[in-house]
Length: 492
Image (cartoon, rainbow, N blue to C red; front, side, top):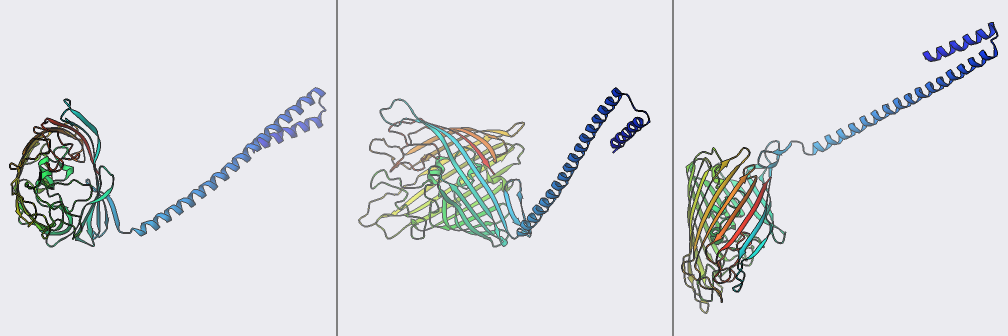
C-alpha cells in the first residue's frame, strides 16, 4: 500500500511539473521511462500479494481437512474401544496376557523356539573304517501355549500346540481342563506329562543340556491321557496322582516313541507287546494305569524346583522325590499280558551358581502267557544319571559349564541284531556349556555327547535313540559315537 501511494505521488508530481513548465524533450523521455519502471514494479508486487493470499487460503483449507480426519479417527477409536471395554493386555515380564478388568477371564500367551545344529560321527557300516558324519540344522521345538481361566480363576485351561520338527505338521501337545477344589488341591483332565520322572517333568525350556538324557527317553512315560490331582499337602510336601491310559497314551503322531518293545528275537523279554492303535478310548494299549509322585522340599522354595540351574546369588535349594507307575496291558488279545511296574527316586541341590542332580529308575515286567502265544521272560532294566554344573556371572548374563553321566542296564537282555554282537548295558557322558543372555528366555547351549558302548537300535534294539537327541544306531562292534550339538533358545 505504501508503494502504491509513493507511485501515485510521483505521477502527480511529474504531471504538475509538466503543466507548470514544459520540460525539454530529453527530460520528458527520461521521466516516461521512470514511470514505466515503477508501474512494472507495482504489477510484480500485486502478483506476489495474490499468490500469498491463495497460499494462505489453501493452508487454512488443509488445516480444516486434517481436523476433520482427526475427529473421524478418534470417533473410530472410541467405537473400537467400546467393543473391548474393561479388557487389559500387556506383558508381565514372562509372558503376554489378555485379561478382563474384573479378573474373571485370563489368557496367557507363551512361545518357545529351539534352533539347533547337530553333528553326529559314527561308523554306518561294518566295512567302513572311517567315521561317517551326519550334520545339519534342526528346529527341535516350536511351541505356542495358551493358558488361563474362564469365568472363575479356579476354572483353568491349558492348550499347547507344537510344530513337528520333520513334517512341520501342527499337533496338540498338552491340552487340559482343571479346577482348584481348594487352595491346595487341583484336579485336571486331558493330555499332560505323567507325574513320574523329574527330568521329563522339567520343561524343555529349562533343561541343563541341549536335550534330556537317553536314560529319560528309555524310561519316560511322556505325555499320557487321563485324570490327575496335585495336592500341596504341606508347605514342604507336594503329592501328585493320576489315573491314565498308560505310557505315551497322550503322544501325538510324529512325536518320539519311547518305552516300546525290547524284543531282539521271538520269545525274548520285552517291556510290552501292545503299542496302541491311537489316542481314542478304544485305541489305547492298556486296561488301566496309575501313577503317583511325592516331592519333599529340604531347603529353598518351590520356584527353584522348575529347573536344574542355580543362578549366581541364588539361595540354597534341596529336594528329594520318588514316583511309581503301574499299568496292565490290554487283555483278551493274542499277546502276553504285561503288568509293568516302574519306580524312581531322585534328588537335587542348588546354591549360588552350583547345581547337582541325580536319579535312579527301574522297571519290572510281569508277563502272563497266552495259550498259543509266544513265551516271554520277566526282566528288570534299570538306569542311573548324575549331572552338575556351575554358573559363573559375566558383566551381562552368565556362563555355566556342566557335565552328565548316565548308565542304562537292560538286566542281561542282549540287544542284538542278525549281524551285531550282544549288548545289554550302555554308558554315555556329556560335557557342555550354557551361555545365558536373559536367563532361560535367551540362551545358547553347546554340548558333546560321547557313547562309550555301541548303541544298537531299530527293531528289537535300544529304545530312545532318535534324531531329537542326535544319537543314531551304531553298526556291529562299533562304539565311540560322538554327537556335537549347538542350540539357541528363545522364549516369548
